[in-house]
Length: 79
Image (tube, rainbow, N blue to C red):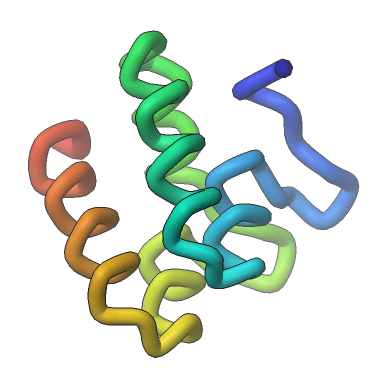
C-alpha cells in the first residue's frame, strides 16, 4: 500500500480511515504507519481539500478511543 497516496480531494490513508470511524481500521493503519515515521507524520499533518485535518476527522467520529489514539500520535510526531 502507498502510505503517501493522496486522492483528488486530498485524502491520505489516515484521513480515509478516520472518516470511516472504525477503531480497528484506524489502529491497524497507525501500526503500519509507525514502520514509516515520515509517512505517519505526513498523514497526521495532511489537510484535505475541504480543510479537514486528521484530528478534525477524529472528532467527527465521536469515538473517544479514536480521538485518544490520534492525539497520542499527534503529540509524539508533530513538531
